[in-house]
Length: 271
Image (cartoon, rainbow, N blue to C red; front, side):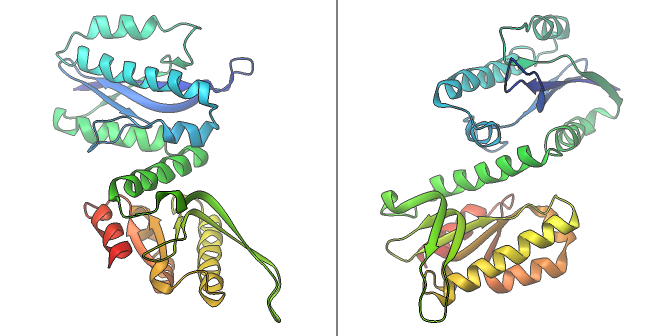
């Protein structure tokens, strides 16, 4: 069976077109599938947060991108009955007024039962292979978990992309701690980091060293307690067992894609 696909590409700046692949729409003779940045398998609601982070979208563009994400979802649903000719026609009709294009195409021979796996593989290689896009994707997943956890009674004390300045104290000099999220209220202060193990080994090692040092300093300077240190990662961390052991000794570690990620996070906050 042939699986045909087109890459969904986003143009961040129409004056200097350098399209970035953000999704894939694929079809067989009887089904249409979609994998799209901001679309999560277990969450029917689309989230534009990954686009905001990856492309530094201004507020006026967020709604436009959100509408287009919905449009692609509707296209997939509309033609999932196998009306492939109309699907191709609609994709071809995307013109210069759209910030998205669907021109890059390909096909793969595979069994019908492998359709979902093939789509996931194309999405990983074409979309998540981009370091900035993957970083935004991981960070948005963490944000989603934080939102759904409802674990923070004082939401005004929850700060995204936080930088904590450390003032000189005794023999200790000035310092700066960075967290993806920081919470400084009851029941305890929380510092959250996300590590991308999908990068090259040097970059991974640098991230691990920075995270461990950050939490060690935060604990020594009484910014955090050990149980307030949290690191999110994805399944690729298993490729670095030594690094994984190190971060597990420094913080509570949570696999973003695990089924119990939300429960583990909420439990670590409230226990």
